[in-house]
Length: 206
Image (cartoon, rainbow, N blue to C red; front, side):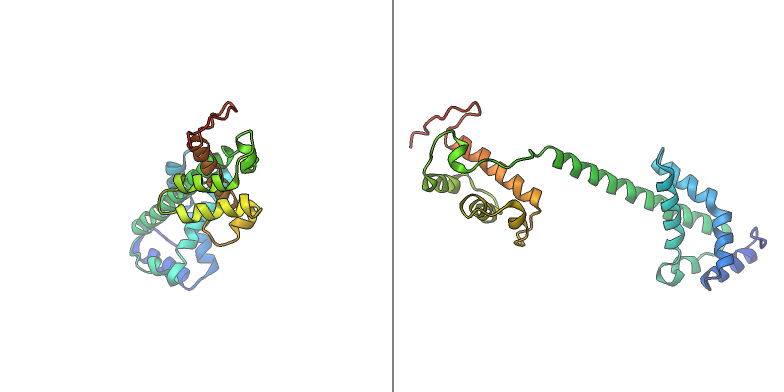
């Protein structure tokens, strides 16, 4: 292993790494593993060892990006350690953000009922004229996505399309998103038409 304690040793190692010398990369990794792992652990806390290992590998791979641009700018062992710590910490924070988004998505998906609302004439426990439902829909739609939501409602309840089929129509909604729109509109229709959640239908005075 080369003398890495001085500036000349650092330049030599970096030069060899830039040339993609495999032995130099093995030396760099062996010399800096503790620095990188400590940086990752400082952000991640207790994490699966496989996660730390993957992020450690990603840290070294970042040094290769843009033709080793960041690595070429290093002038001393201290700078290289600082660079690796910065890369490792940023990767760890990105990982935690991705996990937080994934958990939020999973929680939102779990809160959705497994089945979609029944067809409109079954929602209220009695037959309702579809024309009346469509007119009521015009009153409950609001916001910049009103036209899209109206189309989703009609495609599902009037045209018989499935949530997955509607999601494939480039409306900017996933299947779960289509289901969420339908549930929201059904709740609004129930309130507008004077239906209580206990199953009793109350005339809305129309």
